[in-house]
Image (cartoon, rainbow over all chains, first blue to last red; front, side, top):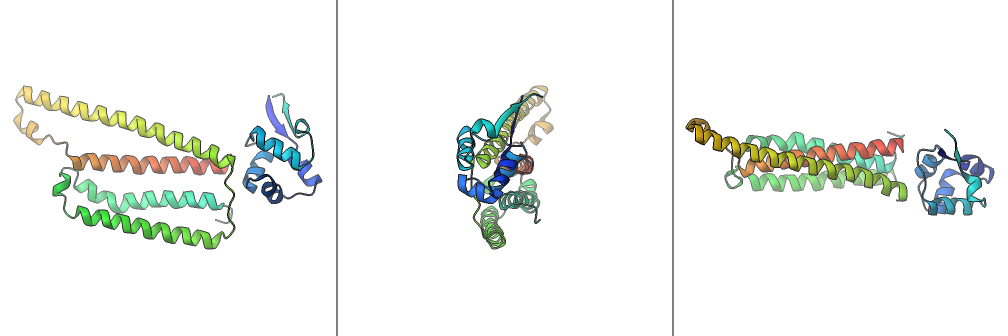
Length: 67
Length: 160
C-alpha cells in the first residue's frame, strides 16, 4: 500500500499557494511540493496541521492506495 | 542555478570547499607524510593559512548567498529527516574507515616484525608510520567523507 494524498487539489480549491500553506503550518514550500508529489511522507503532527488548516478530515486528505 | 534552493546552494558551497581544500592543502600533507609533525616545514603557517582561507571563503560565500536569497528559509521536519540520513551515512563511513585504518596499522606493524624476523634490515629500516602519515590519512578521510555526506544530502534534497 502506498500513502497518497489529495493535497494539491484541496489546497488549490481552498485558494492557498504552496508558500502560504507552508508558512501557515511552519514548513518550507519545498516540503509542501514534496508531499504533493508523494516524495515525502509527513509526520502525523504535520499532516494534522495541514488538515486543520485546510479544514478537512485527515483521512480525506491522506489515504492508502493498493499497489 | 535558479532552480536550486538556498539550502541546496549552501550544501554546494560545502562540497566546493572540501574539494578546493583537498586540491590546495592536501599536497602539502602528502609531501610531508613521512615526516613527524614537529619537523614539518611551515606547519604552523599552513594551519594559520587554512584557518584564514576557511573564514574568508565561508564569509564571502554565505554573504553572497544571503544577498541572492534575502528571504529566510524555514527549517522543518523534512530538513531534519534529510540531515539525519546524510549524517548517519557520514558516521557509518567514518566508523568503517577507522576500522580499515586500524587494520592497516596493525598489518604494517605485523609486516615490520616479519621483516625483523627475516633479517631484512634494509626494508625494516625503511618502514615508517609517522604522525605526519596519520594526519594525512585522517585529513583525506575527513575530506572524502564530508564530500560524500554532502553529495548524498544534496541528492536527498533534490529527490525527497
